Structure formats: structure tokens, C-alpha cells
Length: 236
Image 1 (cartoon, one colour):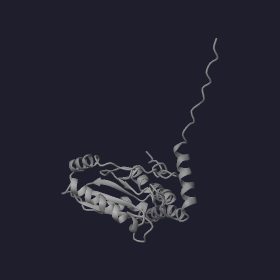
Image 2: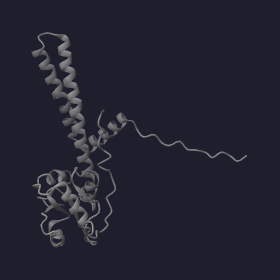
Image 3: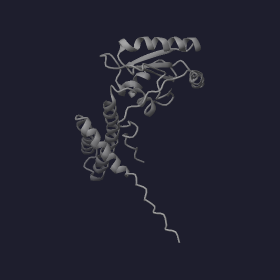
Image 4: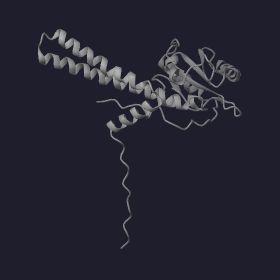
């Protein structure tokens, strides 16, 4: 008889509470102010619930308890929202300034309705400055990664390429880099949302498919914390 093969137990994924605790510890370590924002998110609704319970319940203990519980539940919900946002910002702070950081954002947290790739459409092999592309209702947005003085020409070249292929599609741009006026990683989605919508959903798909014929360049995504993985899961 042959010896039975030794099977190794597959490691269990941490439970939801443990994941939240890990995210909290990581965020607290990287963002010293996060703990105060999270405390405020819990305590303010709780205090408001207590005050409203005392004022509006006319001495009814059961009603006061309901107000307190409502304030506590709202506080826990706000705590999760604040934790998610601060954790994401802390994760992005770890990769800020690294080559491929914009690609990590486009891969993990691009808003619904937008199409983008973690691979740049243009890259300078010497400096690793790069230009990324996202397509959404506002049209095409080119995102330059690196100092403005080094990426301006790359950005203009990509704009000309798109204008030749899709002359009627708006082309906007963002600058992510060390310059004072540059967009921060955690602000990319917010800035994308500020552009005026001009395309329909069907046109977004058509433009994205048309631009996919343009050859891109590969640039590795920086190692570190994946912003997608540090988000706390929603409570059901």
C-alpha cells in the first residue's frame, strides 16, 4: 500500500472583526490624526442621541434607550465610513511618489462608470515618468505621473494621438507628482468627478474600445499595501 499523501490545511482567512482590527491598527499607525476623527464619528451621534432622548422622551425610559441605541448605531456606521477613508488615504501615502502609484489607484478604486488601466499609455524609461488614461462620461482624462516639467511633452503627445483618432471627444488632464499644485493620489477620483459629463454610457464603451488599439507601455505597480484590501468590509 502506498503512503497517503500528506494534505496541508489551507490557511483560514481572518474573520471580519479581525480584518477591521487589522485595518484600524494599520491606519492608527500611519495616520496619527485618524483616531480622533474616528472617536468623533462615534461620540458625536451618541451624545446627540442622549440629548434628544432626554429632551424629546418626556421621561420615558424606553424612548430614551431607543434614542441612545440609534445614536450608537449611527456612530458605528460613521466610524466605518471614516475608517475606510482614512485607511485608504494612509495606504496611498505609503506609495506616494513611487513609479506606478497612479496605476495602483486606477486598478483598485476607480469609480463606477470609468474605465482605466494600471498600465501607462506612455512612459519614460529613464525617469519612469508616465502618462495613464481613464475614460468616462467627461471623455478622456490623461493622468501624468511625475514632475510637470518632465511630463508636459508626454502629455501633449498623447493628446495629439487621441485627437487624431477621436477628434470630437473631449480630452482633459491631471498632474500627479511632487509639484505643489499637483493632485494627490487620494484625490484622483474626486478630481475625475469634477469634469463635466459629455458622453453617454454607450459612447464611453465605444471610446474605450477604440483607444485600446493604442499600444501601452508596462510599468510595475509599486509594492506595498493594496488600497483595495485595506478597506473594511461593509456590515450586513
